Image (cartoon, rainbow, N blue to C red; front, side, top):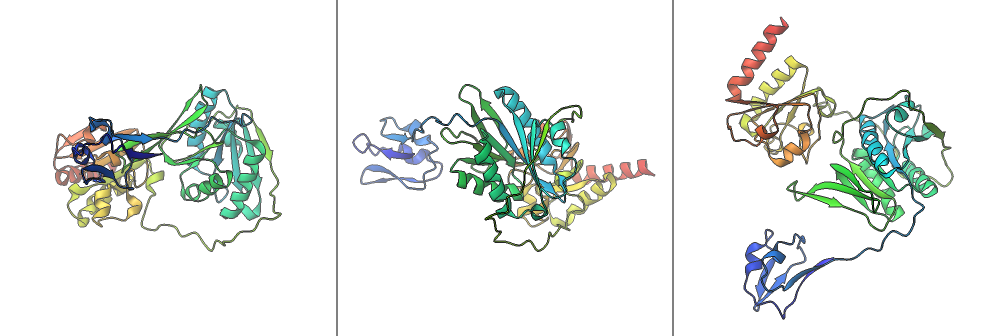
Length: 395
C-alpha cells in the first residue's frame, strides 16, 4: 500500500503540510509532495479539501486453504520447568478456542520436562511433546526445524507464543519459513468469528496508537504476546487431555550455534516480572541517589524495585528494572508508583496489577486515573513514613 497525490487536483494550498505530524510533506513548484518516510497515518487525507490525496491499499485474497484448524500455543520451558507465560497464553487461547469452537493444543520442547500435565489442566486439549537432551539448551535452529515440521504436518489455524527472548528470536524465523504473517509484542488478542481472523492488537508510534492487525490470506496466523498481559487461570486438575510424544527428528538438522552459558542478571535482587510486590520510582525522585528510598521500602516489604523509562533514560537505574511499553510488562498483587506521572507507555506495562498505589505531589497526574489508592503528597515525606510504620509493625 502507498500514498499518492493527484497533481491535477492539488492546488498547493499547504493545508496538508501544516497537518502532517511527521513533517514529510512539502510544496514543490506549487504541488504537494510526500516523502517515502510517510507513515500512512492519514491525517493529510482529512484536511485536504480537494480530495487530491489518497492511500492505495493492497487487497489480499481471501484465504483459500480451509485445512488449517485449531489454535496452538508454544509452551516454553527453562531447566525442565514450564514458564509462567505458558499458562497466561493457555488462558487466553482457551477463550479464543471456545469462541471459534476449535481445539487448543500446546507444543512443548525441552528435556526432562516436569508437570507437562499442567498444560492440560490450564486449558490444552492436546500437548505435542518433544523431550530430548538436544533440546535442553534452547538451540534455536533445532527448535525451528521441529516447530515448522509440526506446523506443516498438523496445519493449525492460529499459533501464539510468548514475546520472550526465545519467542522474539525464533518465532519470526518460523513465520518466514512458512511465508505467513506475524504480529510481535501483542497486548491483546480477539477473533472475528465470521471470517475466523485473529485480531492482533499492539502499540505503535511509541505506544501512542493501538493498531489492530489481521492476516487475511495466509495461514497459520501467528502472534507473540508480551508476558503478564493475560492473567493465568486456576488449573483444573480434573481436565482430560491427550499428551502426544513426538520423536525428535535429528536427520538433516544441524545447529550453527553453541550455547556456552546462561548469565543471570545480578543487578536484580528480585526479578520484577516475577514479583508479587513492586516499588517503582520515576522522575520525581530527582536523582539516582534517591532510589535508596525505593530500595529501603522494597527491602521492608520483600518487593522488587521497578522504574519508569524517565529514570532509566537519566541513568539512575539499569534498564532491567524498567516497567512500561519499552520495558517489562508486570502484573503484581501490589504496585506502588512513587513520583511517576503515569505516561501511557508506563501504564501499558503495569495497569493490570491487582492493586495500584500512587504517590505523587501533582493531584492531576494521570497515574491517579488507574490507581486503586492515591496519596497526594511529597514522596520524600510519605515514603519514609511508610518505611517507619512498616518496620514498627515487624518489630
